[in-house]
Length: 508
Image 1: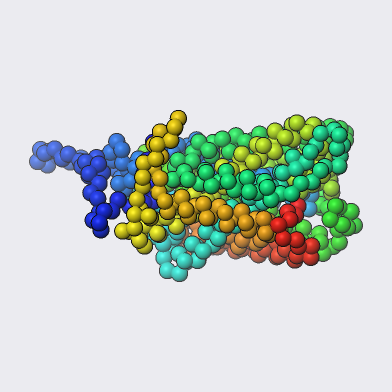
Image 2 (image 1 turned 90 degrees about the vertical axis):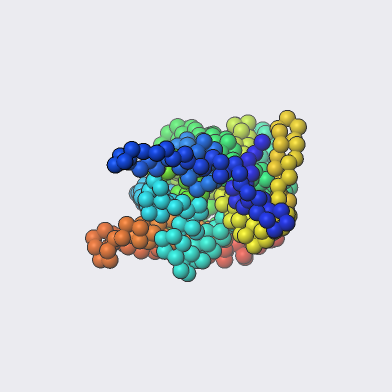
């Protein structure tokens, strides 16, 4: 049976809060009399119990491996298949360099953010359960509200983007030989609706810490389709007998499926590519929520630091391999998606496997990104209407071959409405990936760099104009410029898409 959601308060009957006898029992610490003058070192685990953590919540069970799987699921999205296009815009010199630089920026800023999970002492300090709570504890003021809007708008936009991405693999393009290299295009609406129905079911998983198994499956699937893309890229390079591409990226005058590349378009493409690589690593907006699933000891930030190092190292290796081999295979004509774009049509059975892996991964990634948003709304609602059984009450629902599921009607209704809304918007706005790019552009700098840097400075009490303070501010300002540049490129993409806008038609 799934445990009671950690986002809900104690049950309430007729306006009276139910006493949590189990918590009081497990948190009681028996104090034995000690001889006079005997001293004893403080044991931070003394108040821990077998069933509950030091904050009175259910014992966290997350490990280094579950945290790593959450990060990999969040970071390695289907966008890994577009990195060949991104490197193609920047060239053999700038492309790999930008990718490595952003890997280090995210690794460093994630380490700063992980240390803000607890306020004060890293072992016994007060926990910050969400990104917003960490900002409130360390910075406060209007920055908390700004952080909340940026974070949750990005999560909402990501959910829409994943819905569109799921339909992007729809065709399974009827690859069989009878169609040759002329794929049979199909409407994407049915695939979006199917994806939405699946997400309605999985969205009923109460808490972030209970989607660990789905996250692990999604991480495995991400390696599956990335490996297929990599393998096909290597095969294409071997078939060509040489590496394609140039040092400076796509050439002006190149004829692509979208038309002839002009000097202005090359600039927009370069900015979009810069943003695509930068945002491919972004997972800071859910880092605190992931860290809140990790058990201790050891200190949560230590486990999170190790998980971040492993995850970013693995994703960077895959990014470099997929992006570079894809560019080497197709040069200036590198497709936006190696699997469903203009790159490969045979062997179709292998592509079918990769496409299925992408769908499974997107199902898991959708939940990893949406669970923090679900928890925020449900926690706010529980405090707003604490006496409402509709909001706070849970009912035991027996499920054959599973056990007992604790049903909360508010969770059922609100999460279903959320999934339906994201699906409708994805169907209505075929170019929403560009809009998500705008949200990501404005989200990358504040969530990945600015807030972690400012919270770290506040927590460690780093003085203004010291060498360390100046270095952190330079890093923050440089990432701000990149975010603005990527936003400009995404806006240009939206303007171009509006020229051929057709509601409920997916654009690739």
